[in-house]
Length: 425
Image 1 (cartoon, rainbow, N blue to C red):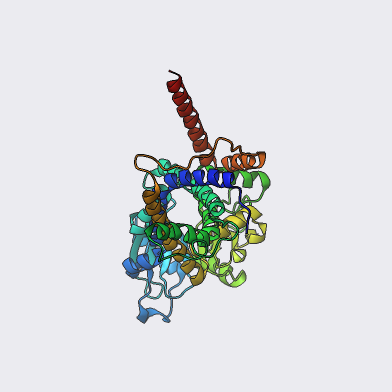
Image 2 (image 1 turned 90 degrees about the vertical axis):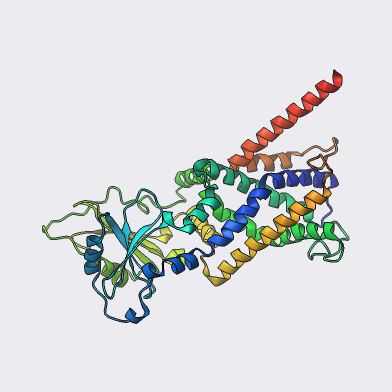
């Protein structure tokens, strides 16, 4: 077993408690909303089944051409259609993308077999969109995003300090370390629900946090800057084909959607759901992307709208290592890597809620009345250079943690100075 430094253990315990006080109310909320959001597809497909799904009797029947479906969709709406998504699974209707003010999807669905327009789904009007906004920004826009980032940053500190505090002293048994003691009273039960479950989930939670942090404001901006400076993000043309143009040397009519879909499906054999973005103007290009199970199977194509010539073909091999890792952890965070990943995220979210509840109950039973119950660190403890370096590094990597730590430190100094002044007086 590890020979623990008792003074360091008390100091880390103090900051573990502080981190818990900052994060606990929000961690429970994030665990609940995250759990609900895992059922996004189940809920949306149930509520909007008529829009998403082809009637069973139509599956296997002949299909209309994409051009015919596009014409029917266009005639049914006064909104601009910007593209189309072709689902890999035959049970889904064809989804035409409608121009909107936000990045949230707004789609119009057409039965590919009958041409019946099944209606539109505006993601901003769905229950799951509200859940996502609550999970990511507390329904408070940018201020809420900063609060969530603050909580997530301190949650990382909570996990790191918690693992050290949890780590057993030499000679400790399994009870309260690797297993929960159900027969030794409520205080130990609540403590074990927090500590033991927290330990077993700690590594997975750090992975899930790595998937969530890129969505934050300050850390996310820093990450994008690093990717840009080191060329470890998306290639320049991955998200936008700015500067690419279609030429029309033979003065012919633009190719229709069927011809473009053939290029994607037959010529390049793209897997997963395929999205085709329509050209903007007479010199614009078709953009083809696919969302595959494995990121390495994803590509971006820019196609001349008149000749079908591929102007630019980007593959995942050209994506930088930081973006590759970012997408991996973001997908793990959302449970997109199959049923086992989904179950793992659901399980960890439930265990996190139980652990947070155990922490709250244990804290309330332990703390003295009229006090915050923050452990007192002996004055003889001094943080060494390594520890200070780790703190500074965390403060730089996670700016919201760094800013809040400065505020807490200044407040502590002022409080101590005021107390000493009062004692002298």
